[in-house]
Image 1 (cartoon, rainbow, N blue to C red):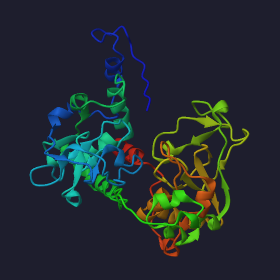
Image 2 (tube, one colour; image 1 turned 120 degrees about the vertical axis):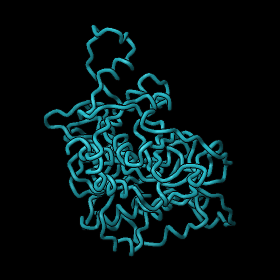
Image 3 (cartoon, rainbow, N blue to C red; image 1 turned 180 degrees about the vertical axis):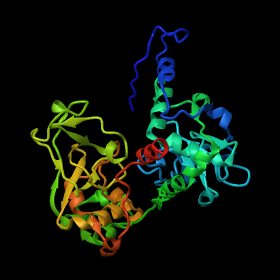
Image 4 (tube, one colour; image 1 turned 90 degrees about the vertical axis):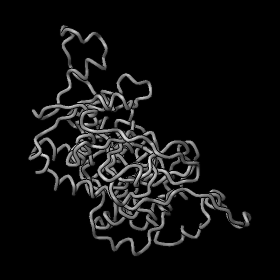
Length: 390
């Protein structure tokens, strides 16, 4: 994430440190008084040590677009927070070192959960501040402020000491109480079913009877790929772009459309635009089903606006567009993610082939879903609108 500001270098006492210069020029979109995170919250310490094999929630296990826990890791080992009597408790806020990673609000549903010590734990001095702190840190402006803290870091991570020194706006209690209901609704939408943690398994198989050894090595239940109707049967047209890097521009211009890549599907801001008439582009129309072709997670969503797909995003134009929300919900859900991991190819950067997307099995009952899919507006933008426009 990049952030730019214009500052007056004639100002006294700032020196030429770009981090301090940028921080001094940053302004929150409110006139509320400021207080450091250190003044607003205590910092609980990790209370246990865990070994590989225990399900632990790490910063990488959180979805930036929704703020939800995707699944737990069984590979983490080291110091950890535990939710319970002598550890974290409801109302605590966990902040990841990544500037685009979502902060997480602890509640009763997480009782007994383990969290990596890479999070910074905050315990608001006033319980009424918990939702506000969670919302501000997860807002688009909050992301930008955290990005300034990481500007001088070679790893792009925010140090705990810098986070604690960061100032947040502190409006009157009457203002935060007025927002409690809407913030609670937004936070509750981050409570989603988790995918199963990775586990080891073994089975015997006659490799002479199968052409695709990768499937047998990926799952103890390859029959899952036969349980449902192929995703391709719901699709009128499946497309993906060739690389448009040579013709992309870093800001929107007349006759250009945003380039939707996997990061954009994950909730990060658009960074590139391109002429949709450029050779090899796959143009996105509202109602198209978009699926990440790269990485562990589908980030499936129904397009709300026109755009151009990055080469790592599949564009599925459906025979029946009304089925888009149900298909996206299934692909993003526990069963869909489990099937996706079976089909992924490659070790360093796992990806899906076009044929894998076409064969992706969709159980008939998945189409019965009639709720909302993951919001077209990422969590950061939802909070940006609620916090600073009310």
